[in-house]
Image (cartoon, rainbow, N blue to C red; front, side):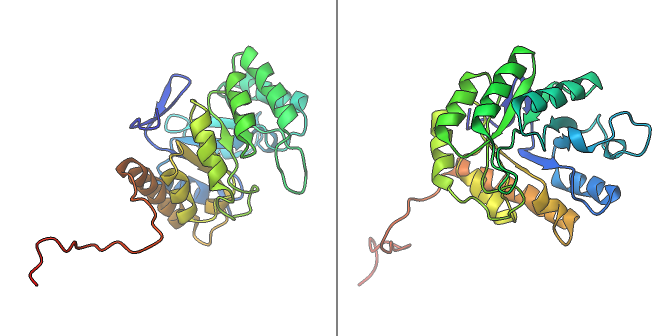
Length: 258
């Protein structure tokens, strides 16, 4: 699966491995241009932060649903019950049954509440949702979420919006070896090199928002992130050389004239 040419989960297939959020942009036209520059096919929408009745201007008016797959998320929810409520609300207004499930446990760090997250995953899977849970970089919990029916797992690279990059790449690598479903690194990416590192590890995709929306030039950064994800994926497939403590000559002595 890790070597597939496309990102696949829950019977769906996507060419782009970059998933982009829709919050924090200076304005909606900039968001539109950034989404286009990123090459993404999946965009996240915070259910609690959009006007779902469409009676007044909403960011949904600026997203071409024929071009992009909407991924509603339950950002801002602190209990399983609350997260399930907003997932159902999104489905009721016609948004996809695929949901990025967030259940936050701490307001300062925005780290997930693993217990509530697992509870919400089990509930929503039983109700027919395609669940992509945002989780700590915890291999044990990632496996439990897979066993609960999650279509993919989204371990954090660092706290949401921190821009710190992957703080514990070793845990991401263990998760990749532990679960069979796609692993999409979510949160903490600050710049293109962070996205490339995530992909070089073998991650199936990267999800980001602030790194693009908060950049001085969001559209240019979106293009950079697209290239970084593609380059990181290509490097992973190519297979890097092993790291060595000492030098290894590029040119061997064999055949040299003395």
